[in-house]
Image (cartoon, rainbow, N blue to C red; front, side, top):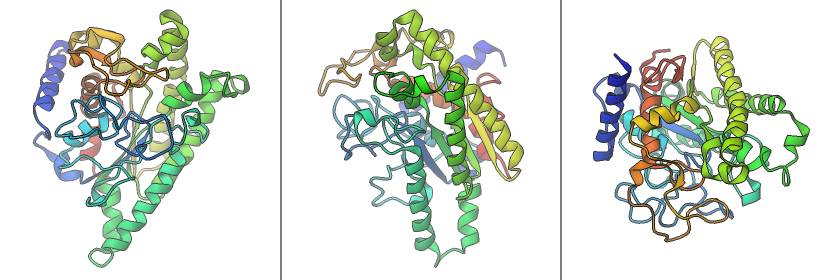
Length: 369
């Protein structure tokens, strides 16, 4: 398939997703995936920060203005769906995955969302904005969920059957690391990490701590694991405001690529070590190249769709841009729903061979380990 035809396919898929609340393709992934467990930061948060003492909240208008059937904002840091919302649809799941903070009425065997706005790999990351749930704490919460599942269903299923469901029928998705730069390393007046570590040393530290948390997930039966790389945050309005367009793009994106390369190497290491599991790296950075985005109709690459506060979030009840589908960024740090849909479709089915390593999420869903 030629590049132009592949891009056209992506456009058609995004249009279909825009017109249907739940979308799926015929084939094995729907039969193979029954649950999605989500970890990460505000790119995936679906409401875990709503009741925390933090400035990192999105449970007010205009957030969620385009979210399907939403009466009030859910706490998602965008105008509509997040990447993981769309991935759940592509995988054929019937419902959006509920936040850990509110799973009442949901079947938690189908997944839980633990992601928290401003959270990072390091415990101290993001604390400048208030409370958040670090990756370590998110995995603590997942262990609570696993205990609840086993206690609730042990009369109906054997422990072996429950473990099989968690291993073979569930996908574990992590998007983390953004804030370890935005709300840590790049704030030298508040955090001392940039004076303690060179960029290479800092990325190595993050990956070491990240690996430990991934191994905790593996020990709790995670076998199909998606590790999303950091996108081109150097082009975000927040970074451009801080460093200027030329310096911001080069300086920050170079830092991010050091982390991404080490994360991809970690995926290779884990796949070599564990023959009964499959880990994949999502090359979000590559997906957000300006050439690809221009071909999809994006025209606003460094501007926000909503007027923002001093910390980069939408001003409450503010009026947004009219053509929200043409904006890459919703506020100063978070992508628009349109970019989220595009990222999700390329994560699910690779447009280029290097989009996902070693396989894409659709192939991961179909994989029999």
